[in-house]
Image (cartoon, rainbow, N blue to C red; front, top):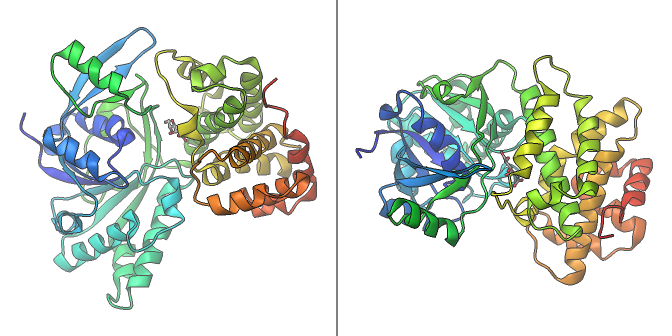
Length: 427
Ligand code: CS2
């Protein structure tokens, strides 16, 4: 198979990038013209493994009835993220038309000199210096307003660099289009059994297959000054206003995921399918959806059908989507998944009890993790550990503060969250 020429640079070579953006690009009718150079973020070994198989990998589409297999060839190059020379070279090439990002939610908040966003900014400086023209940056992270959030982060890093490289922020303002997107495809971590299954079913050894559900969705909003693949051929939708679609996805899918991650693990479950099968968890999810749905009013969002589809997707018994994976980075995720719904409910004079319950479940979850010495991942981990040392309502107050200072400033909200603690634990 001849690799397509690189016209897309991706930062964050992980399973989701491959099941989503790489798959959409593969299924565009002009895919032969659009190769991806994908740079790793946290896992340089992923580049080595994929490079050794020329960027090719098997997508295992795991439906409730069985698996189908497909070799995806859109990743033309898999590169170690530390190779900033190659990144700068590609960004300085006029043929490169877009940069897609899956750098995780937390990276938009914290960007040191080595962060993928700082690398991107230095690459954009190389593009300006080369006179290679405008480009689009397409954020594919589960972040509310991801296009604008990426733009703000990039501009603030560029302003920091401007001391030595005057005018970079202005150049970016004039030449870089920040595209907002809502991305969706459930992609559990690949296991050794998946590698063995590809070998048994397909007769070849793939060290880096990716498992995903059959469903895939991508909604985008913004300009592509240097062109883009015909992703619409694979079902992508282009809209003027992304916000209602983004809220639908972040609140209904991701919100339910976070609720299940904390309540489900407290109740002894390991996967999303197990947790959604537990009436206590499902009732909590439905109650949260009822609150969220009041603020998803754009005609055509099809919320009831979307909810039904989610229940089916979550129940897929053949996908082992681990709650522990979803539980990571709770402070960042709850800020986008629970806080907006709770705030919207409060603004309309209601209690937002179901959204508050999600925060309470997280507080119980991190409290239990700290008490038992179980490791967990969060950008504010040190603060969580300190807050978990407090007792009772003080602990609730301090932990709520890490998710939302505004909510923590409302004593009624803190009391409500506090009274909901322990209500979704083991029976
Ligand atoms: C999940 C998402 O890990 C998480 O936080 O909620 O990765 C989710 O599976 C995807 O957004 C589905 O599209």
